[in-house]
Image (cartoon, rainbow, N blue to C red):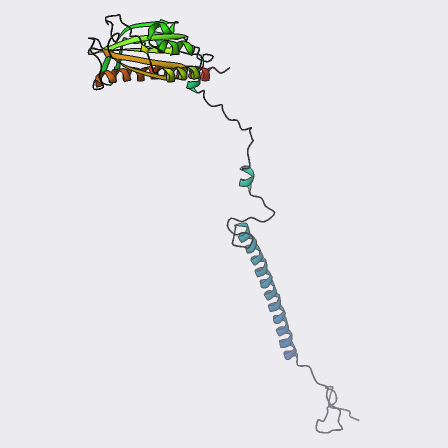
Length: 289
């Protein structure tokens, strides 16, 4: 009996429904293409993920670099610092060491030194008050004549001036005479214990005047003629002038040259008293007690 045609196995008739069906053979080519496609998709996903991760890391690093370089962030605007960071400049410019405030004493007032015998201690004489042989005032030159000093103040006055000086305690009176173009003037400086007595003597000296001082080439003047007189005071000093013509002529209000001579010597005496106070104040400032 024969069961087939060779060793190829039984043959099946596909047209006969009663004939057993041959099983489906896998499409190996399609399976291979599908597998290759899946592999490609996996590789693309892996590559894409790696790229995204790389980009994310790069962005983070770039942001860190920008922030480190002072980029524009909310907490790194120009002039601002993070709350936890202090400004070194503010620490280095903090308040320095403090010292107790001291106020230097005011300089001595020169007038104080010529207003009281207790402070007015510098040596004084007619020659220190009137030191030079001539006095120049603007275009005018006055030649100095005789000088004198006395502790008996009333002895070199006339009229009521002696009583005024004695009554206010005059301790010394110094005189000097100057001449110019036939005009002579004697200036006298009276010393008192304080400024109050000197001022009172000036205010009371409305009658009487100073005796002129002759000598050293200057003859007597203003002894029997009308002359022009002045009275003033500064500090503990009262000072007086008597001016007139050396030829015995009376002085009238129109004789401006005589008035000018008396005023010039009164101004010079005032300046000398001020200088005396300034010199003593300066010495006190340089050598405080």
